[in-house]
Image 1 (cartoon, rainbow, N blue to C red):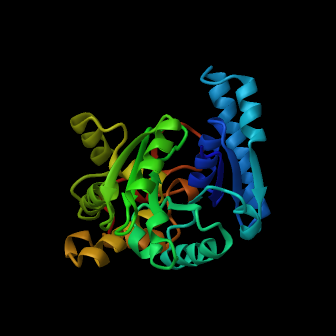
Image 2 (image 1 turned 120 degrees about the horizontal axis):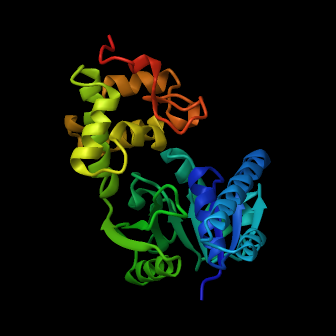
Length: 301
């Protein structure tokens, strides 16, 4: 039975994945090149566990056990020793991911399963730089990982049935709902979501409606828990742009071309929650949504 897991990357997704595995009794090696990032990741996990305790979702003892199940590493080779599964959750950059998987192929046992939390990059491409493409798979967790039930399981061209079943069963152990999809650009989640977000941005760009109006229509009219522009801020506008470019390159279809407004915002460093400003202002500390001053009217010229 699988018990030893390594997670690469201590950012939003990586610390959420580590939190989830550790809470369910797995021994987790959390790996990042930066000790500062690792400490931030552990602080975030601790804060999120405290929230779960406050809501009586877990006990104080479960919180302490979860934290004791996580060890941190800044050296990849040390962090992936003696693990049965590695989940890569690094930045959504293909060159970075390919380099990580080349190293994982060298540093792990030939039996170790290698998974990527990529939201759009081809699992087949990632697997191609290893000597074990049958043991490479996608595990696309949703943010926030401890709360969201879905895990999109992406089979690469060579991913074996046995490995797929192992990962599906593992997700069930984590009390997640695994959904198996095939390896095409954007998979299912982002192939559908990102064009919707892009169209919302285009509607703003063309002056059809303002930020609040667009999000309100989708929340009240389509029963979405949050509007597409608010969601884009949570995902990160840089991540949205990266995924749209993967879709555009992968399908060669202009319908996936990112809106010029999105490109300009990313260039200007307006990335959403992570930078304090996107379509909304996130630096004020209030839970109330405040539309960024840039979009206080539908005029954006």
